[in-house]
Image (cartoon, rainbow, N blue to C red; front, side, top):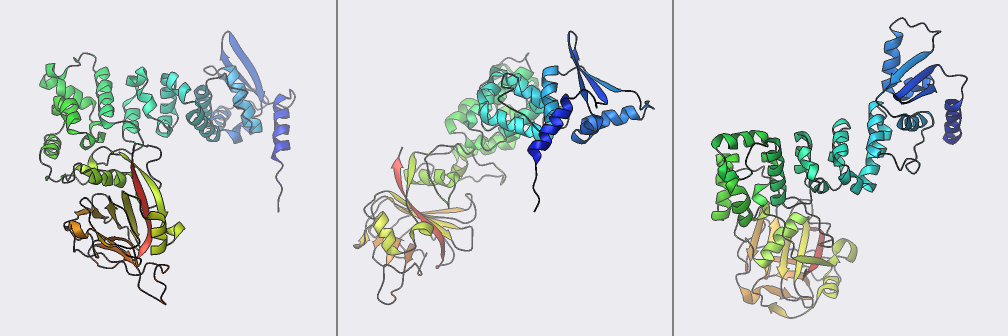
Length: 475
């Protein structure tokens, strides 16, 4: 076992930096009238920074007399920032509290120049996590630093703040593209589209902002400007109102096929998307919607549409903007509460508007059902007009929705069953063993079409990996 004494080592190297006797290199930093000479040690600089290693190696190749004191100039760096960097090089010490008044991106810029990646990463993380308002206020400086520092903007936790700055139109194309392609951009797609158009107009100041005045050549100019942005706009996420208001006036910017597909998606609900690579809507984060181990927000959005019968028969509904009119209150999770009918009825009975999610064992398949009424321990058949069952085979695109067709036999209550839709359209149940029915785990799970419109899976029987029951509460 080895013990590491880095604190004392760091202290000794700081003392060496402050010593006036053993240095072999001087570094002239800054420009008149503010210039400062620093004394340092070539061996330490070479092993801590490849930037200094290259400079020293190149000067040594020019037949320098090794008895001469090595001297270099760094005119574009402030002595104040260089002193901070030098302290880090020698002692591995950097205090954010001591340097609070300095521009963090400027320090990061110099650290990047000296190829001190550890310090660069530390500074960028600090800026992103603790200085969001500073980043917004000093947009231009952050932007320039991001270009030189492996694109700081790619790591910003709230990239939508960048669009709130009036200076965002000065973004280089590469940075704009890196932002609008992000799934976590917390903006409506219609607003993203407006920002991209605004950026494009800024790059072409002679264009009239009104597209009704544009010639074919004007459209070609703008199309060329936005050629790398247009494929990243999730046009299918827009509502019909947003499309006809915000996109249709610029239809000549889009390819003929894309515009045709978009138009069909709003006019003909039964038409099919022609491109399997169409991006899903951005994941707008809304706290408290759901805590699930089985489904994501895309599925929750689609389920909510089915509950409210919004775009139910529209083949493009999964591509539309997220729809969250409900909070999903967790009532039961099998992996924490158990997989038995008695636990289901204990936690879920007499609670209206429940949704069931079932993760099928050994697959990516998700089954489920919606009950607008309540569950009971006994009672046989119960009527429901709006209940439905569903499945997602492997992704949100590959889904099946099946509404009840025999409303008198929509739900079935029994102490042998957990949630049971129809007789066996979707049922979690147990066989009787040793006379203890309700406390046995589910071992008779069935899914076959009887009282609902469609069969939601190929095989009649399945096993459960986990299941969850939520109560829907309108927000």
